[in-house]
Length: 490
Image (cartoon, rainbow, N blue to C red; front, side, top):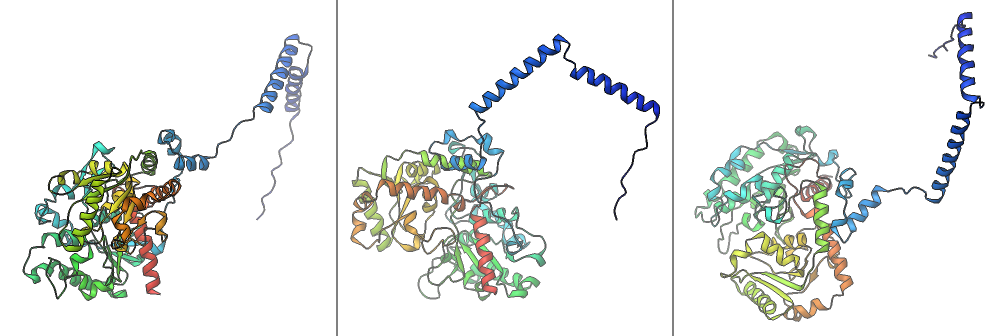
């Protein structure tokens, strides 16, 4: 429907006379140049206008592109030149993940005995270590103010990823409280903490009891039946070996969680997958010590890593191990590093073990080294790999199962862009220094830049953060898992 144009009523004779009066006064004031004061003001106005135009012509204003500024800040070689005040008012320079229906995750409200209830006996959650200091702060552990902000740096235990993952997903923007809308169903079982408390339990039925109870609970849920658990997943802070007890061979204390048929239907996120029998297992990073709440904190650390002086060609942090193969390669590393003037050795044997458990000492060695040797630990993987990336120290691997076959969701396919590989059985493994000296300075610089770019996606952000501004390890895991489940279901 069209509106009708409003027509003003005609002016009365009095109003017309009034308009003429004001119009006449306005004309006299504005246009009469008989007044000498007005002439002077007009000349000043013309002069100043001309001068301003001349300045604009010779000195045009500079425009600032915020995106370019942030890009330069991200690439700068001097962290002190980053203007974080300016950056705080602009968008994050990182790729920020977004939530879509395919990533909607529902968190099962499990009975406490499967997760938080275990924490009441934190002193006995590990047969070797009092875990009470480590389960504090939602799994981050004790603050480390000497390394930086006490809100970002923590003495995080290497086998605590399941707690941090749980805390992050509970506060994640992709979480849904409506299971009917979920594409993923997260089962927050603290399986690693429970397993490590039962390593010395001789009764196998008792060792497996909680895992069996968990499966019984899940299979009684209506959402399990929808896809027989294929859209369900768990995250474990210990290696897969701790949940796959073998029927033959020696008993190392593992339970049978991952051997249960129902769990084989699920996806399992673990810090180390079984290289040959882990078709439903996906590697996630070990947690390191840095847990930022904002992208500005991440950006500051990245630029600090770029600027660090590295007087040592390579370093090794580790001690001897039992077993013929493990002992042989570690003893060889300790020998080569100890005999080289270009290597920094932190021997984690009886005399130096205490320093190896101090995050500040570990990071100091790595930030002063160009390359960090990553020998297999008690199993193929080790947390040191992720400490190395955090420190910008190029990892040197001697087994493909230490990283390449483990963390495909997180690491580039082109392994030479961020790491060095030396076959532990090759002649090159007996002359590591010579092999590393062959790598050009330009190549080293490019590899370190690649490592710096990987830091955000291998870091667990602080669980309390609501707007991180970068994709952390949990973001990558959820997006990759959603894609995997979608393909599998279709």
